[in-house]
Length: 129
Image (cartoon, rainbow, N blue to C red; front, side):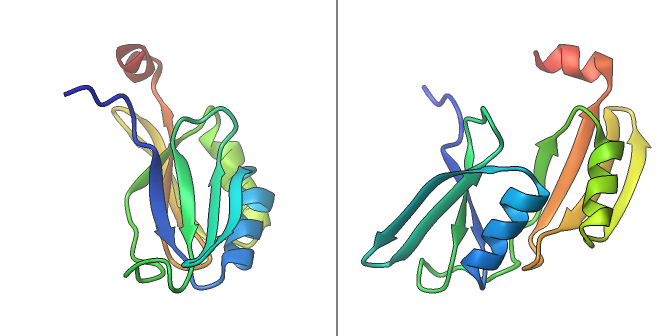
């Protein structure tokens, strides 16, 4: 196998403009693609410098149900500051909680897709490097 990374993760959303505002204004992602296609709008966002992007898949773009994605782990250098920013934006956050691998919190995007934030412990970060 010669796989190097995931190209994109699909996040099913009901309203692409609302999702776009959340991912860019609240999470600070940038738009990597915004194209009209015969199937619908192809909209992708990503954190600066990321290899994997998130496709905000709207109605008509596959057999996806908004809010059905779970378990997306986003690494951060400061989970506490990010949790505070989410709370200021009106997004409920659970955590952060301490685990052997780091401090972790969870939240949902406006459509209910489940995401997590993780600041790894120094030891775990070194093992992943």
